[in-house]
Length: 198
Image 1: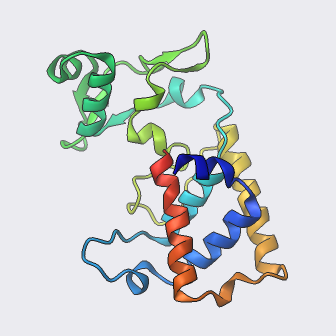
Image 2: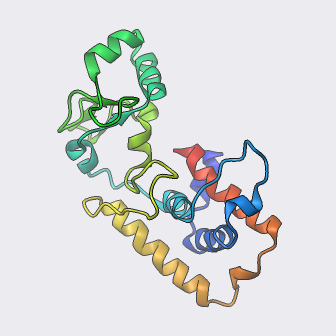
């Protein structure tokens, strides 16, 4: 799936799929009890992730406070580091003071796993979900808008590209607004692929 995401970075295609996906709300497209429902803002975030290219500036790794972890993030990192989960938790995490079900990295500014010599993350393949969804912020379904992090050059560039592509798609000859329910469902599935590639 992630190979498909890498191939589809065409802003025009992403913009058309986004317009189709947001033309009908999820609750009118998905009827199963197990179907996950996303908001319009979530689909914008997914479109951004399709287009985002990290500039490897390291700003997020050196200024993120706090860097949050879910339990499954902690398990994956411990497994990656080949240490027991309880040892990882004791050495690297503290409970988040505002969200008891969430953990924070102890060592931040910069992140303990940021390598300044290479300008990258030492645990990139198992980085926490909060790092994966950065720079478009928010846990999916929790905010009603996309937040662009101005300190992230890739974030700003992505939003500019998507905004321009959406403007062209809305006024272009292809008109995305007459999509069938099947086309809308397919567009939503296409955008959701971004979550699998994170």
